[in-house]
Length: 538
Image (cartoon, rainbow, N blue to C red; front, top):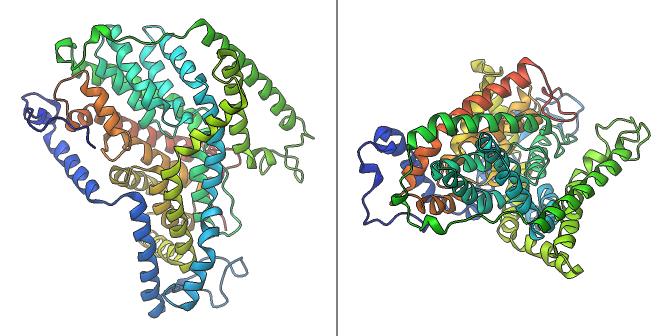
């Protein structure tokens, strides 16, 4: 990371009474996870390796003519005449021709690529204009002392619609706010970190992560059902309500567990001069800009409602007249772009950060320039997903896995507890949500579809596992930044101390969110999103 404590300093792990000493076995386990994670190559290298592995394995499996019984109904699209799924080898002339011919289209046709980039164009305008930062500061700094913890966790969750804003702006601000209130600054940092990272998948609005995951889920689902579509909105209901669940759990853990354990803060522990620390308050001009942006959002909402609410609305499904399967839902990424770009532009005009068209263009350009690593990752991930689909390895593994689950009788809702736990463990070593889902979805989405569950429900469960262990994995991309901020308030603070501080959040979030998932899906029978099914029927 480059941000670890000085090796010559005394280790907190050896300090009597430290959290690590009290729970040494768990910290030792996490240290092992960290070391194993550090042995993994970069996610891009990992996907390139996976691509080569798929080619080699397909050649071996194809040579031995590996097959499984096709579970799809007779006459369904993609089902072979002999009723078997054959592994197709890429280690031959035909495979080479397929790889070379489709290398570009695999990349350009990868669904998450375009949707994420389009959404980020709008987010870039809102962020560069200063609107998102001002809105977050107004929300957090305007909260009453009684509600400040709730507000910070809530602000962290909703900040996920704006990329890294929560990590860069909110977390340092939360530590300062807690210190200004006479509370432990690390408790404020932990509360914000819990919202931003532990509540990564929960949100009131659809963000860039929704089209990112749904595109990968759709590609995986089409291994079983070539016509299956998964929209960005399919988890919105569940994630909307989860926002309030995680807000409450995060505030509860902060005030009842983390803050009492940290004790009274001693300013002598700080590595910085706290007397010079201050927060930039929202100026009157920024408030005017936020009001103007709010009016523009209201106008956009009314205009959008006019296209959807009336029975003959132009964005309803032209065949059924319903919202399900409508251009509105299919074009949700366009509305994410508009609903960030226009208010951001209005705000920028009022405060003077968006004076010319060049300012808007620069904002969008900067948002794209920050996506260079993601684009390279997508290139290799898209090849891996395509190779996996061509070779039928994903389908063979899915059928074999489904048969194993049926053989041991593990086909009920309990399977999701194990699935969520597995996703959480994988997340400890592969912190990127897109990378992790691109690897696991082609296997587990078809597998769980074959035992009767819809891709939308499977994706919602994955998002829980992917979120709850973000707080305790050093492999999370912003973990080093959080450690650097935390070390300003506590000398010799190391990774173990930070992990021990965040561990209660991970445990409570896992238990609470998993129970809520079961209540929502299997007890109340509610859909996880608009038009989303709970069970899959071929």
